[in-house]
Image 1 (tube, each protein chain N blue to C red):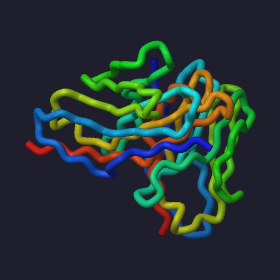
Image 2: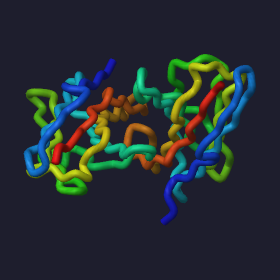
Image 3: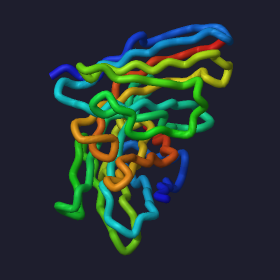
Image 4: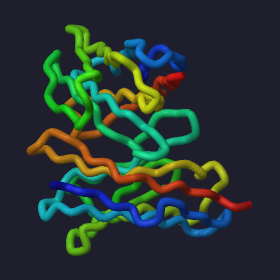
Length: 113
Length: 113
């Protein structure tokens, strides 16, 4: 069964510093990969998705993620953190053969002024 | 284009009661999924409906049920409420299915006293 791990349940960065949120999945077949963001008291919003078109995926709000098949990773990065980036981030894997999505446990990002 | 709407946004019930939550997906989306989100368990998949048929079900007791109508609107019902059912219930819609890009509603915050 597919699984998704996110290293670090809480990550703190200074404003202006690099943001790196890690995601690893277990499938040997390149799946659909997603990053979602959840702001307090809101639902999840799609940041970006990988669908095999390109290994480097650009999303909204300056975020991007790189698919690395050999490492089964899909880490999320942003060059310069902004206070408004403070939120919960979820990595997810979509399995077309089972018609389901597996969400990681989430990483809470704090941005320190 | 209107987003996913959920009603009500907040709900307070007592143990033993039942509750019905409603979700209106984005126009044209035939897939509606429901999730339970709690601080301790994270984001847990309840079930997915596609064109009025339940396509997938998570590991929840039979007290949790759902349905989808011909206009793709969906409802979920929880009977005999328990304290542990207190959570944020999120609905998400998708054009193709839960395995692909999903659009989330703001959620219904259920508190069981």
